[in-house]
Image (cartoon, rainbow, N blue to C red; front, side, top):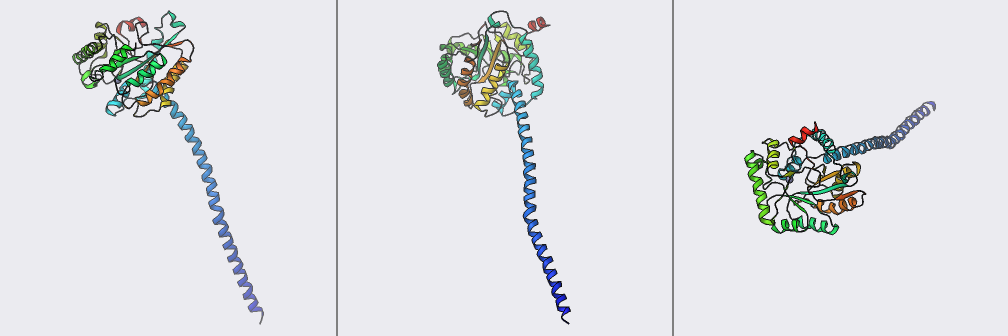
Length: 328
Ligand SMILES: [Zn+2]
C-alpha cells in the first residue's frame, strides 16, 4: 500500500524538478538572450559606424571638390536669396576645361619661377572691411576688393585705395534681375559703379568681376555682349580659379575656408591663383581665416601675394572672343 504514495511522491519530485529546470532555463535564457542580442547589436553598430565613417570621408571629399569648383551664382544666390541652384558636377567639368585653357595661356616671364596669389574680396564694403584691411596691413599684404555701390562706406573705399589695394568693380546694385535684365541695364549699372567710385575715391577703376562670374547661368543677356562692352571700355574682367567657399552656405567654418583655399594652391602648380572670398556681413569666419591663409601662403616658396594689376595674368571663365580664336 506504501508503493502508491511513494509513486506519487516520485511524480511530484519529477514535476518539481522539471519545473525547477524550466525556471532555471527560463532565467538563464532571460539572462543570456539579451546579452547575445547586445553583442549582435554591438557588432552591427560597429559595422555601421565604419560605413558611416567611410561615407563621411567620401562626402567630405565630394564636398571639398564641389566647393573648390564652386561658382559664384550659387554663392551669391545663397547669400542674397537663400537659394542654391545648379549641379556641382556639371560645373566641375566646365571649370576643369576652363582651368586647363587658362594654364595654356601662361607667359614666359618670371611667372616661370614665381607664382602669384591674388586675394580678392567681393561684395564689400561691409562691417568687416576694416578688420580685413587691418589684417592685410599687419602682414604687409595687398589685395583686391571687387566692390558694389554702397553710400555710407566712403571711408572704407578710401582706405582700400590709400592702403595700396586694388579697388575694382563688382556692379553697383549686385541685383541679378536688374543688372542682367538686358545689355542696356548692364551698361547703365556699369557706368553707375564706375562714376560712383570715381566720385568717392578719385580712382578710375580698371577691373571688373561679374556678379556670379562671367560663367554665371542666371544672366538674361548674352555674356559675350557684356564682355565686349567691358572690352570697349578698356576694362579687364577677372573671375577666379580658387574659391574659399565662404558663401556656399550661411556658416562655413574657419578651417574649411582655410582648407578650400590652401588645397588647390598647395596641390597645383599654376602660375596664377585668384582666390574668391567675400567681404560681407555674416562672413566673419572669412576674416578669421585670413591671417591663417596669409601665414601659410607666406611660408610657401616661390609664391607671392599680389593685388590685381596689369602684370597679373587674367583668370577668366568665359574667355573673350579673340583669345578663344587664338586657343584653337
Ligand atoms: Zn558678388
